[in-house]
Image 1: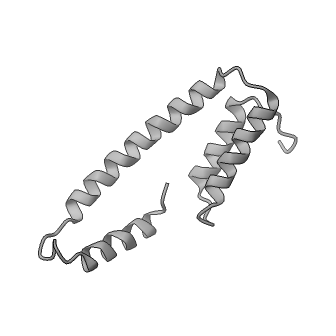
Image 2: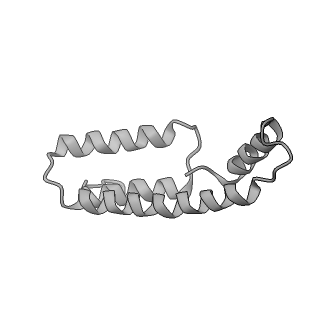
Length: 101
């Protein structure tokens, strides 16, 4: 999930740089789409995590999935609390033993 300040920056740049839609305030529409995207995103993530809890995969496949998730999260060089919680939930659902707890 993109941090709120970055979303606001993107919306501002879009409104400033869009020539064809100049004069139209798209802020309300963008906010509506953002809320829908976030709500649906949480549903998708919850569904994936629940399905992984019952997936018949090997330990090596579990570690590959965890590694992939960590790489995706680290790709923007910003790690949020939601992303940390996602990794913790993924680790729990995949039943990966944590030696740090």
